[in-house]
Length: 115
Image (tube, one colour):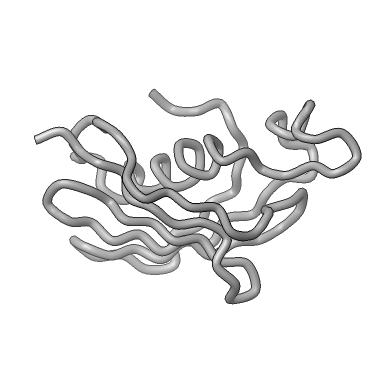
């Protein structure tokens, strides 16, 4: 099910196993409401589901259902009006993702897929 978020995602390159996207974070994103007042950041769930998973499903529409997550880590806050680079790598049982802002890692992990 698509997340109701208005991230502006552009696929830069893609093939059967890899994709590179740029993602522009709107300044008025609904996720910022209450997360956190005066110091807004994109919540982890939005990074995984609304950015990484949505992009992966747009690149590879035939992905199986999600069955879980593995080794998800958030290392740098993503804020209003940021632009991030999203790298996706499709494997048989998962899609690995890494997000970067100015070449610094923001988050990484794997979306596990049903068999």
